[in-house]
Image 1 (spheres, rainbow, N blue to C red):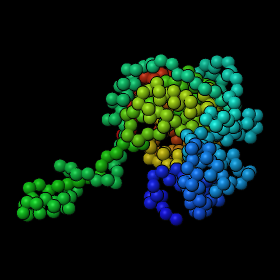
Image 2 (image 1 turned 90 degrees about the vertical axis):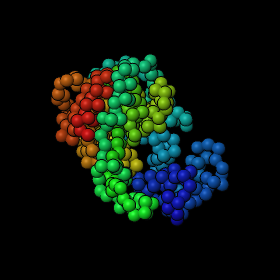
Image 3 (image 1 turned 135 degrees about the vertical axis):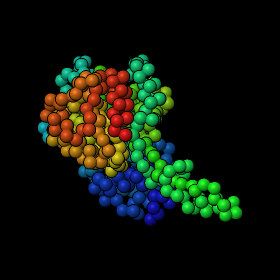
Length: 372
């Protein structure tokens, strides 16, 4: 079978889907992947439902794992919504919700809940509308200052320099040939600096309701300033919102994210959502060598052991972890009080304040500048 690098770019999602299935324990032979791609080509699909039918017909998922198969299909082709696994004893059954496919109906909204109030592990699916832009000055400063402040690392690629680095003998030889053997200055080169990837994990549970809009606007501004960036929301589900936040207009970007995330203001199962993140190799790769920024109050209602294990694994992959919480006050050291936060404290490089957009911008600029 041809390797992915030899295939047209349009075939990459189909290869990625087969790889995701194998990574999650599905038996998918290379010939089935070829049949899947060929089947889609023969169908000339008019929509995602046609591709889904071709996938079911050629990849033949076991009936008892059909829900998992469909969840992986939505993750790869539609926008990556993964329901975090519920802990034993949870009364609410976790279901994937996708408005484009007409999935489960979102339940009635509950009473308003203040930030930092009682957190819940129950899943509540709802939509979210964002208001007018706030703290524009802080976001503008973040976009202007972040490119220079964000941490960088040496890449394998080498670039020509004028005064330092190792001698570039090939370039020196070419110059000597052009100038009849004369070499006026020995060219040098060194490994290029590249901005580290940023991975932002935003808690959208009910206890963070008052801070969610600010966190999303902060994420959009940071994305506009960073070279490599990934953003996910965590609550009772894990949702990749990077494509939604790529829109240049912040209001449109947030509107896109509002339609993508299904668990706004729901329960808090951060550990399960992070376990789902780490279970997908493609997602876990986003954390490798990255600066991971978690925006959450840490009022975990799931199993604290799951959160501790996930953060420990994330720390082994990431460069550094910065945890921003609205429960911290700017200028003072944050002391974790809950069992879950005390458990993850050794793995977090720094706790900072998320009490508003300006606080989050200032925390990231200061931390990135010191840690770079």
